Image (cartoon, rainbow, N blue to C red; front, side, top):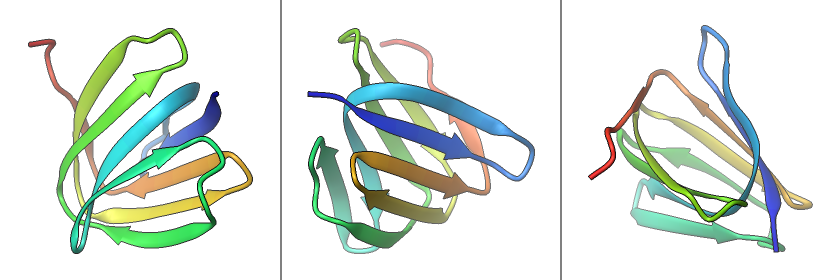
Length: 88
């Protein structure tokens, strides 16, 4: 099952896509989000964002500090910086 992910930096909307899972660096450890996740608002620390797209493709990014809001199969991630990691 999919949900919608929007990743926003101060410069622009970086991602606006359907995903099956994300893993974000939370204050107390990594947080995994799947479809139908309970409502959540949390702060994020600099670290690795892992995204599994609806197509099954996996992407990773380095993010700066920020916030994640999850509600009704919509995840919005606000971050100061985002850099794409090259495929392993």
